[in-house]
Length: 347
Ligand code: F6P
Image 1 (spheres, rainbow, N blue to C red):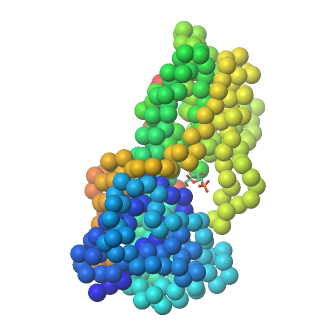
Image 2: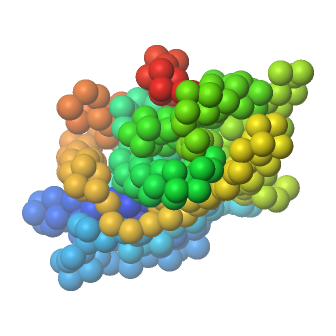
Image 3: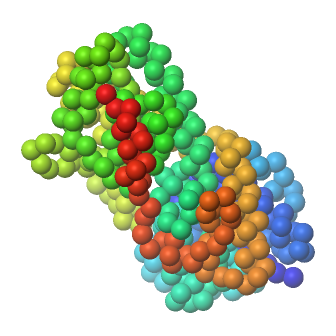
């Protein structure tokens, strides 16, 4: 009989509850107990945990958000935080922990495993899809579907008014959401952090298109794109200067500045839509439900086999496992050839 803790950390995303359900169902079938840790690492720092039974996990598969709550608490930024995590883990009689999160949450898991042998396994979550070691994180497909639907809707109103529509999507370090929803939605220009085309180049593409007789355009910009100019220099657009416990600024607002630049430089009437947290809300797509379920079962199996320090991952169509350290060592950027697919349709 084992006692398995589960936590969800970082920004929420659709599919978290589906993972919790899968870990719990497989654990129950082995006769184990399952404990929910509240609000990510905060629950272990502050000893805030509750038992999960069949009742709590019922009806979770299609439900967005996380029943466990989430936070960006970093135990290593709190005095004695890591020690408190280890003490509360032991006092709760836990044998294993399943940490569901992105680079930050899993980075903490990797360190606790390496430095203190915490028996932890990871599940890769983030709408940004920027974790290494896995082809896809769950939550990403849903975010791309939401953005694609928004782009489709913006197309019809853009066309009616002869406007340029700038759509700002999430993606703190990488342009995965922008590129994939831009390809799916037929964007005319896409700006991402990895391949920063200049504002001037973006305007040239729009002019080319309008010269071909098209009088409306869709521009997708990733929140992490730094405004880049031919003369050199880049400007990151942030909401506020304060950093979270993992050292991240709050991004947002680049769409507005880009829209102004486009309107001034081209004379085309331009509007901006910021999709924001809509991208993280609501029910997961079927693909994300299935991926989350497969990850959850894999995580429970890794616990069963005592293979700690590993993360469930998708490679091709196979669920495999990779070391947490490897998955969190560097970010996974949009490869140039994927951007080229999008670029073939610019202008
Ligand atoms: O990491 C996921 C993410 O949605 C990023 O794309 C975005 O920059 C950030 O989280 C927003 O965080 P918050 O929910 O704290 O505003």
